[in-house]
Length: 73
Figure 1 (cartoon, one colour):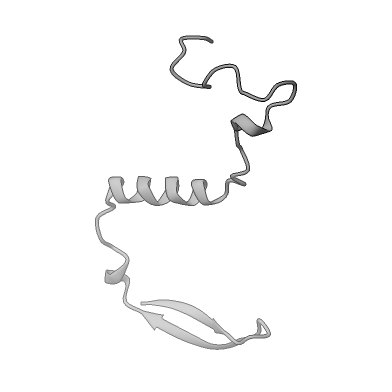
Figure 2 (cartoon, rainbow, N blue to C red):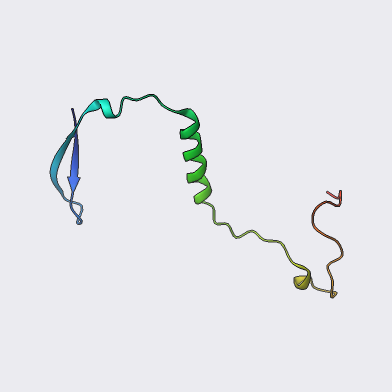
């Protein structure tokens, strides 16, 4: 048996909870673990990247060419 502490809202330990070790002894599913790690890391991104649209380009009233599929580096 594993003893886990139980805390109240103020962060003080108020009780102990016993859990059977068999609940944690299962096989590790690598694909699921990988998906969870990727999801966690993606949620940590700020996500503020953007590209200019045609009306945000300065100097002219139209964007010279699309950003993608032109073959330029």
